[in-house]
Length: 172
Image 1 (cartoon, helix red, strand yellow):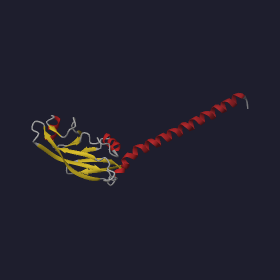
Image 2 (cartoon, rainbow, N blue to C red):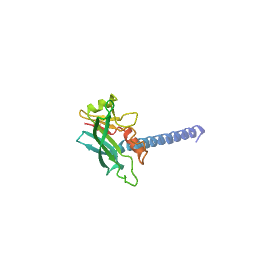
Image 3 (cartoon, rainbow, N blue to C red):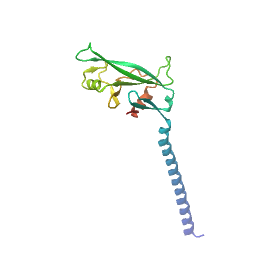
Image 4 (cartoon, one colour):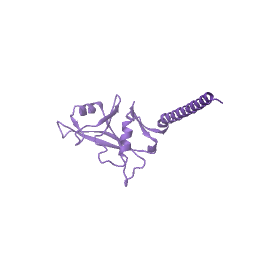
């Protein structure tokens, strides 16, 4: 075998190794991408509230959640003796206990008229200098997260922040 044939054979082998490596790398990347896109759909559970008209997506770790209902109360700024109230629904993590409470996901529910009062800064819902954050709305209700809902930093507040960042509420 002459020198030129030997060099061409080595180059051919190197190119073959590079191609096999590149194809393998692309296959691994595509496999990882398909896993990432399939995982969220498989791991989501949905709380459906037909009374107020919204769905709320939760990670699979929240399977077995409970719903806690309460009432929010607000004061009219111009007439503090006048109180307004409305429903509040909290989604509670299944690992929540009285000995180890975890961060709930509180959802305040407002009529459009009540929401307008909040936007006009005529209705105060507490000592926080900011109002609730809108999560979504439909024709009949506005859904909002209370200001400072996680101010005490209970167990799980980071997870709830991530859930909220994913815009999990879908109004209908």
